[in-house]
Length: 277
Image (cartoon, rainbow, N blue to C red; front, side, top):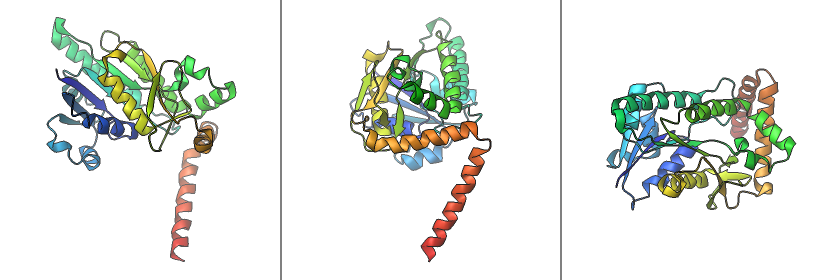
C-alpha cells in the first residue's frame, strides 16, 4: 500500500536530510509531496527529483491555501521542519505554516464529509519544551537556552499549540531534539525520556524517517531524537556556548542583529584585503 508523505521545509537543513533518506527507501511504496517556495532551490539540491515518479512538487508561499490543499490532499503523514535557528524578533514561520496547513486540512475535511481520515503531523519541536528532557539540565543552563532563543521558541509554541488545539484535523507527534549541529552522523536514537546534548542534522533526518515509516510511533505524542555520540561536550560545547551568548545578546541588546551584520561585513572586507596582500 502506498504511503503518502508531504514535507514542508524540504530545502532547509533538516528537511533536506529527511528527503535524502526518504528517497533512498526504494523498498517502500512512497508518494512524496514537497511544498516549497523555490522549486529552483530544491532542484539545485536534488537534481534528479524532476524524473522521480514518486515525487510531486508544489510551489508557493506558506499562505497559499489552494496550493497547500493540493499538496496535502490524500497525505497520510505531514512532516514539518520549518523554523528559525537565530533569535530573530518577530519570526513566525512555524505559526504561519501551521495556520496554512490547518486551513487546508479544514477545507479537505469539509469536502470529504464523513470519510475524513486525519493525517499524522510530525512537527520539528525542541527538547527545551519537553519537561522530562529539560529536567536533566541545570536550571541556569535551561534558563539561558530558553532566553537565548526566546523568539523562535515563541513561534514554535504558537505553531505547536495551533496543531494541538485542532485534534479533529490532525494527530500530532512532536519531534524534540536538543541542539542541532553540523557534523557527521553517528547514528540516531529515539527516546521519550532522554536526549543527548546535540544531534546532527543527518541523525535527525534519519530519526524523522523512522518515525514516519514505522507504525509503532503512530500513537506517541512526543519523542526525542539524539545522536549516539551527541554528548561530546568537548566537541560541541564551544559552538553551543557561542550560540547561547549570541542569542542572549539578541534578547537584551537593541539592534543587535544590525550591529552583527555590520561587524560581519567589516570582517569580510578585512579578510578580502588580507588575501590580496
